[in-house]
Image 1 (cartoon, rainbow, N blue to C red):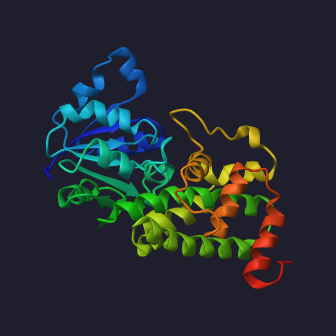
Image 2: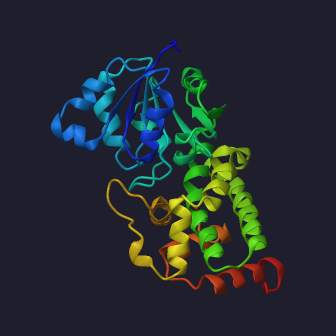
Length: 309
């Protein structure tokens, strides 16, 4: 990649702002957001021209519409990267949307892992995997070589996409376990069970089971489940306290990605019910109502033949 890359960041939320700050010192960075589009309806198309990298730092739902807008204007060498960790209304991941919208002739990838925006914005380190559809896309990891974000690379797009998306269904369960003061040990046990299930789900969906143990799966799951700034962890605590009215699961710029994912994968039968008992429990908890303590007792009874204390 060139010494100074021409980068466009789509979105100005916490992640979009963080990427701008992270890359601005050594690259030419500009940003696009909805307000900018209102002022100039053609701003996205003009900004996308002559870019080396375009980062989709916004939720999954608008990916298709925005990708369709920029395709006629980007160069053949442009790399599109997504950090979105949800599915759209058709239960498609960003990988599936990019594959359909950008096609095989374009370069695109996903960046997933323990990279909390607050930490990186404060100069702390982050870690992720860049899963790319081409070698050129994976080489865009060099964009971050002088930053605090450390990247592995992979060609397992299916595994990376579904690991990070489905992990958001498990994380609120862990937030609820903490809120209900069930103990550190059961938190660790549920994390182990979740990763074990993710390995099997990846195989069923066409990804590699080891990807579930990498940054996009286990790494991001543990980070989201233990970080006090994790929105998904907070959702679990709110549900445990009976605050279901705080869970917003609709709209294009959805924030409750785990809730939305649980509903869409059930609707489209992406993850087969009764095959993954912990995922069933977690998704039922999100789409509830569900007595979590009783449900966990039943899970352990089936798993070990007895309840926990």
